Length: 292
Image 1 (tube, one colour):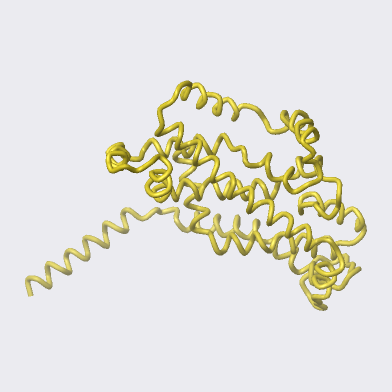
Image 2 (cartoon, one colour):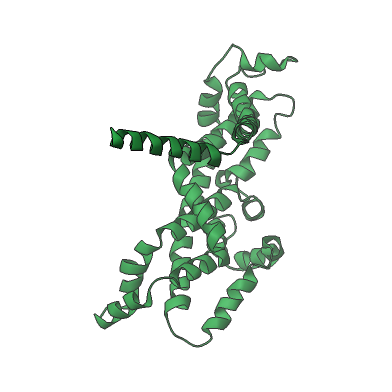
């Protein structure tokens, strides 16, 4: 009986403590969060409903966009009778290759600056820091001239190579590599491991959060990049989605259905990727915010 009384008293104390620690404004915060979520999600829902309307559908009543009739022929027509699918594959290929190459080169450079000893190492790191101060638009003209002299314009190579230079990625990974215990590196060197083996076997497995953050930012930046593909690509077959969609939408200034279908096709892969990798994206963003 005494134990039961003690347990009941402890439970009451815990419940009282929880009630004291509970935010009195939690209901208001939840309501505000729900309203903000609806405001962000509503345009996506509206886009999806408009995209399944018959081609040429017009209405003055906003509610009619959410009511029948529905059809999916717009998706079939755009995927097989236009270049939308080609542009989608171009964007996916450029984004994936750019992300992989960026992770490889930035991690190698960050490891060299962090763990290897050589002359002018600190000067090189400061050089990368200065690279963050230069906006990308300021490098477009010299970048175009270099690509032109190397015959890289209007090619996949010309789209990918300029995107793999990431000073931010080197800085984030360098700061993370500095946190790897020196004893681990030294013991690996004593056991006869080369720097390449240490980089591949020890440092990279410990750096998954940092690599995830860099990969997320690189993929999104490459997917949404408009200025460089717009300048360097002339052939419609090589367009990425940010360049191809405005060209496609310009032909439909009076109707909403087909442009919304094209934008839905462009958005669905990113929505699926976000739903599949939501935890990794949130962890990557929070990690970069702490380390940056």
